[in-house]
Amino acid sequence: MTKRILVIDDDEDIQDVARIALEVVGGWQVITASSGSEGLLLAVREQPNAILLDVMMPDLDGIATLKQLKANPLTQPIPVIFLTAKVQSRDRDRFAQLDIIGIIAKPFKTMILADRVAEILGWKD
Image 1: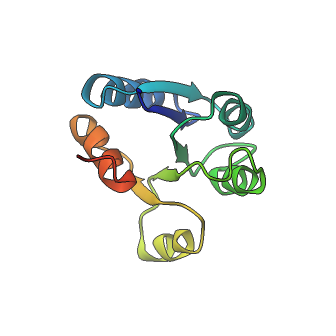
Image 2 (image 1 turned 135 degrees about the vertical axis):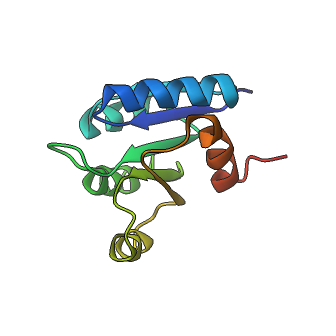
């Protein structure tokens, strides 16, 4: 069964790069959303195995999106990895208080993104 990953990021270039990296290198199916609101709807409908979530987005940011994902029994168990350019220690401390499984710093290296996601999620054989 192919793993499915939902990428929620308002930057289409990030969506495209992540999709290519995760599909080609990881062999996974990738679903993309351009906003937190769209991501919430897709998470319920598609039930992905994991979500890569941008922190800095207009309207509904990553933290607000995460809170709604974790408040919904249908999406609560889906592991979430933050994609963020905010990786200073105070940001990491704040993120550590949230119900996320990991953080991947942007910009990320395309060829190792799938390996990093697999490592965080424990999908390595």
